[in-house]
Image (cartoon, rainbow, N blue to C red; front, side):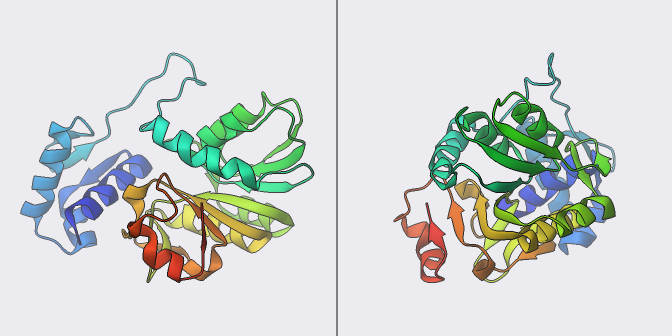
Length: 249
């Protein structure tokens, strides 16, 4: 596993659990504890986490206002979200996952759009609650407080009864062989249910997620209709994805 993949895994695990333990990470990643410690020390120097004895903890990003959510690489995510706006039209039934790229997308949805949107993300629901013409359904369930999303059987049951035109799924990682993968098992199950409920599946992510993988499968590449990145669709980094037949924006 490349260093970038390891560190992406560590940060995703931190976001999910608020802390990581060196010995557990070494087992999960099949690495020596020394290698894990070096990664944690590097991430600590970058101010992405706080190294503590035996592991690391997340540095919370506090907002004075719950609507004022910090978004890393926001301009890059605006490029992605702006491209995806072309996939929207009046009358659609839409499902949206959590994630900051989808949050930026929600902010950019034109006020004139008339659609029904299901989401299990509290932050996205809060953003869409300001939209005058969106019929918004927040799917309830057990709240993952760190990610502000609901998971569990209640979410799966609601999604099993939805017939959506399109879903927009954020991605922790993607590669040619495994397709979309997630750090968290419960979120991966919810995303599987989103895909099953939707006629068209769109995944939006930044280019640093390309050719990486996480432990839990979401879907194979052929199950995606469209991927949207910050890259030019003809960028050579997307060649293998283009050959697979997936549409690229």
